[in-house]
Length: 178
Image (tube, rainbow, N blue to C red; front, side, top):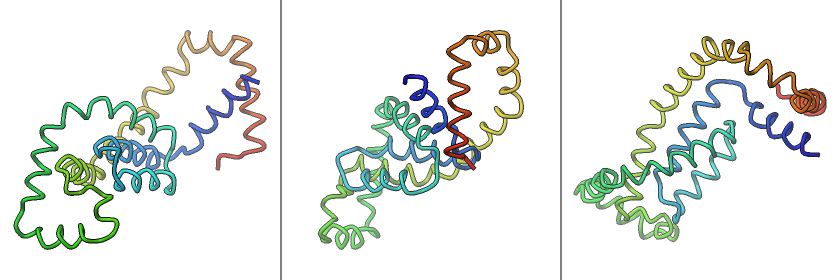
């Protein structure tokens, strides 16, 4: 039973094999980490993660890890949000957006929300590109070395690893990844 659970988890994490899907997942995880969780913008971004084709495991993992680091950037996000919200040319837009029924729920008038949302939007393309590059470099240069290492060969020789591999093979016949 536990072997099947591990097999399903591995199949789920490896189901989206394109580097673009992994890169976008990292960028969406960062964007989620930058936006405070108690508003409608966070909920909309979380729903977006489930609607677009990205590696869900990578998105959740990057959100969890980066959420631990984002408090270090809060002063900068707060300052950026203040500058955005106090820009005179943007005041009519913010006023009309806040008067909408869902405007209050977005909490965009909070400096941390505004700064985090805009920073996430601004960093989405560069972070996606950097993650794609790192995935491709890993696949080209690092993965083969790790797979051929003595440690990995020793782990693959264990009965548990062989059972997990067999379970993944059976799972791929039922639930193809392509």
